[in-house]
Image (cartoon, rainbow, N blue to C red; front, top):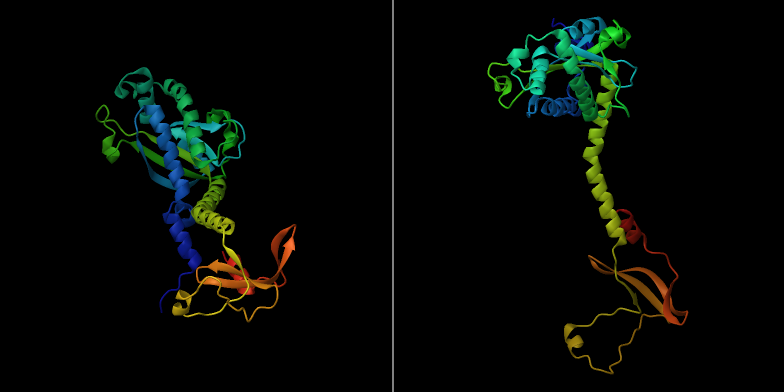
Amino acid sequence: MPKVVPVSAVLRKKIQLAGGLAPKILQCSPLWDGVVAGAEAWAGNAYGHELDARIISRRVISGRSTHERLEEGFSFVPLTKTSSPLAAISIDRPGAARYAAVRLNQKSESLMNASELFLKLLCEQPAHALWEAVGNALSIIGETMPPLGDIEAMPEAIEPHDRIVQVSLSLTTEGGEDGWLLEGGEEPPEIRLFFELAGLEKLARSLARQARSHAAGPAAGSQAALRSRLRQSSIRLDGVLDQFDMSIGECARLEVGQVLPLNGNETGQLALCAETMNGSVAISQGEMGNWKGQRALKLNAPVIDSFVREIAGI
């Protein structure tokens, strides 16, 4: 007898293989496109070169593990509480050395073994710029940038029981990992972004809704604009006393002064006709009169339902 696997177990297995992230988050293109765009914008300004950002890993880790990961690079956390899901950022040593080389106009190789304190101090400015670039790309930055500092100065910024999403990105020139060869043999810089899981899930849902709204917006907007233009367009209306048929030959023999009897007309009664795609259509009835010294047509019947429904459908 085949083994029945509960759906929840299958879903848990998929989430585990995806680094603990739910499929809806992994499939949220606006979220990851924003992360990549923010990293690339920052890298271009920090290193003076257009670089491609590539996400190399995404996984859920504990707050305790996050503290350990932050010790591996030059890392910063907000020193004040923020509503942003972005909890910390980290720049690795090759990235810090490359930035120092650009600032000091030296080769990266000569700065790879520079002191931790020296590189940490030089990383403060690009760290603020990275936080701002990612925040702007994801629209999660407030009116003012939070002050950033070491996790030791604000250990409660990430509690041990917190669930954090670590996103690691590699920065390379066009051509992938082997493309970062500005001075030959350099390791491509890597950055790590740490998001609160609950905040990232909320952000993903918001970005997905915005994407759906924008996708439907232009069509809905164009339809509304078309409807408005059609409703404001003009249509010719005729007040018709009567209608009758004549052959083409009879029409050709019409002469000035000839009398054409209107046998079906009641005195002063007219049909209000509208020009449509299907020809002239009687849409209401009225009677001839005078209003403020001018000839006028006074309606004595409502507009026919079929014409009203057609307008309502536009």
